[in-house]
Amino acid sequence: VARSDSVRQTNLRAILRQLHLHGPASRSELVLRTGLTRSSVAAIVGELARAGTVIEEPAISDGSPGRPSPVVRADAGRNVVLALEVAVDFIAGALVGLGGVTHAADRIDRRRDRFSVESTVADLADLAARLLDPPVDLAGIGVAVAGLVKRPDNVVALAPNLGWCDVPLGALLGDALGLGIPIQLANEGDLAAVAETLRGAANGVDDVLLLSGEVGVGGGVVSGGRSLIGSAGFAGEIGHVTVNPGGRRCRCGSTGCWETEVGEGSLLRRAKRRSDSGRRGIDGVLAAAADGESVALAALRDEAHWLAVGLGGMLNVLNPQLVVFGGFFGRIHPFVIDDLRRELPRWGLAATTAGVDIVPSALGLDGPLIGAAELAFEPLLGHPA
Ligand SMILES: [Zn+2]
Image 1 (cartoon, helix red, strand yellow):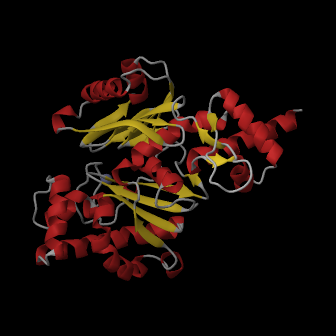
Image 2 (tube, protein in one colour):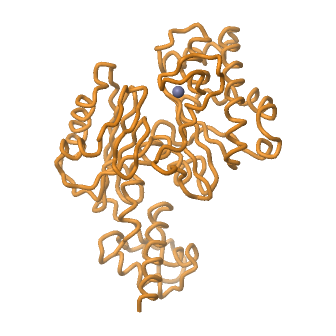
Image 3 (tube, helix red, strand yellow):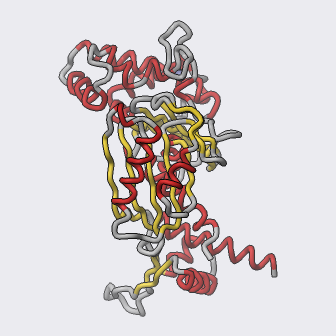
């Protein structure tokens, strides 16, 4: 009995995950996609429908002979999570239904005087209250944070670009929201990497390195189909690997971190723009480069050089099949990819650099938020009945 029950659970999870990630399907399509028998699929769909996670809708006949097969879909209206993101220059939130349906979303730019823990928690609570009006029963809450997150205890151990150290953000947010719903925090790069493998540029790829950057530089690694988070959740801090010991001081306290050579601020500085001009400044550099401005072109060549220096070592360690450029790296991708590809073999082994594809992110700015929603769905997807 125990064995057949665990088979049943595995099959329930397989069907629900299919519908969640790949959209509505007829029972016959589910048979093809999962390899389960027709009668198993019928029993599982029935059980999921009774549990309220899927709905079956009568199919519209396409005119071909035979009885049309009903369509099974994840019930996005009844199974909803709240995804939140704490980035450096904005906060964001979304209500996401099972199947990946976004019911509502908002992103708010913020100034430096709103970086304190108290202001951030208050702003997130306001944002959540607006998204949850009218009220919705939540299945979970996931939060992406631009910092090092100690996973089991929901503590932000360090967020250099926010000036945070050992902040119990999960507990503070739980009090401020007052919903009594479990909250899970994770690093935004880790979540964006998972999101790209589930719903983005790395869909279905098991070995992926995501490089992401806005103000800081971060990343995430999926290795063998699993998120690589390390013993406490800190793995993937690729922005703080030293690439230039004679370089500039980093906000983390070290010197010559990769972030200080390839981050938004250094590209702006090399292009002789204000280093705090952010997204608009970068767009200006790219427009100037497209017009052939030599200062902008030289800055982008330097950027490609330092990208190659750091990436070469990471490819040697991780051997990904695919590198995804997220955040501002996605926007500069077309301007740096040729120089980067040319220089990469100087810094990485031929075996690891030759086979790797380097592509811009498909989810863009939404990656961390989509990953946070997936994190919040994990308990439901793990125990569908
Ligand atoms: Zn650093």
